[in-house]
Amino acid sequence: MKALITGGCGFIGSHVVRAFVADGWDVTNLDKLTYAADPRNLQDISEAPSYHFVQGDLCDAALVRDLVAGMDLVVNFAAETHVDRSLLDPAVFARTDVEGVVCLLEAIRADGHAALVHMSTDEVFGSLAEPEEAGEEWPFAPTSPYSASKAAAELMIRAYCETYGLPVTVLRSCNVFGPNQHIEKFIPLFTMRAIAGEAMPLYGDGLQQREWIYVEDLVEAIRQVTHALPASGLHALHVGSGTLIPHIEIARTICRLAERSEALIQPVADRAGHDRRYALDCSKLRSMGWHSRVTFEEGLAHTVDWYRANASRLDGGEQFSGYFAQQYGERLRPPSR
Image 1 (tube, helix red, strand yellow):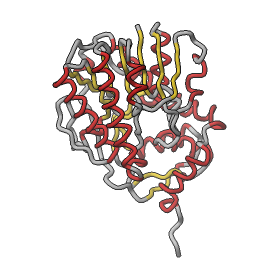
Image 2: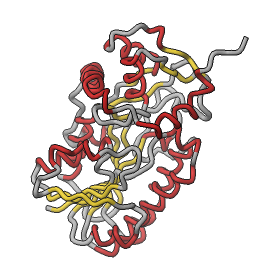
Image 3: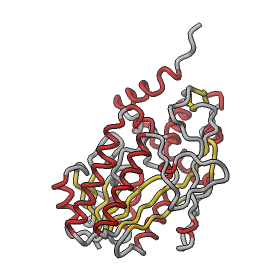
Image 4: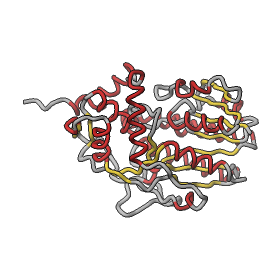
């Protein structure tokens, strides 16, 4: 069986590529190698005969059509994903997350054989009041350029499925964490800054609630889904752990695991349009036999250990330093007297 995995050098993609190769798939990894991708994430399988790497852009229609031809499965992780960056440059999110998905859909339509598994997000539903949980048919209400781009991609997917009968499974996941995640994201950022003894910039009151799943559990969900791919039409599934935690509690736990004082946690001005709470109803996927196995506490301890062991190669370079200064510089500056 042959699979094209897009964005396979990124966080989630690298874990899935490694799992598919271990399961006997012949895997082609298409990755543009933007700032958030790292080929070292797959160094251990780079010479495997069943693994093939292609550097390229999801928006390159001719390249994507060539790569999709003859595939049994396409799994799409290629995306711009960081909400904070979407507030700074929305256009790049529309290009990759929407235009890129259309290129992929066109290639699959031309090929007429491959099934698509597309990675989406719980953020398409916007903020939910307690005790609400969004089911698969919950209405979209995105509030950031990132979540709007993912919702727009899903609408294009729905249109292609309705019009052309393409076989697509959309996975909407809660927040994923674990090794290999780029240091701009919440848990890696706070972990790296705690390890270094630097201020941890916490938006607002820190009471925003997110549902968290360890990356290995998400990989198992994707394995489960690929065993039951649809012959045609659109199928949506939600992947979540049911564990909702306020950001302030995660920050405190990271300080404890890194053996640092909670005084490093510094409240800063909140970002625009910051949603308060996401929550998914995952009963449909659980009825298929899947459930999360790694507790948040276990996963976070392992994650902090991994970043501690790999800190020397994860500073992000000048590109990340520039972004951090733009996003947090004013927020972290002491007030003038």
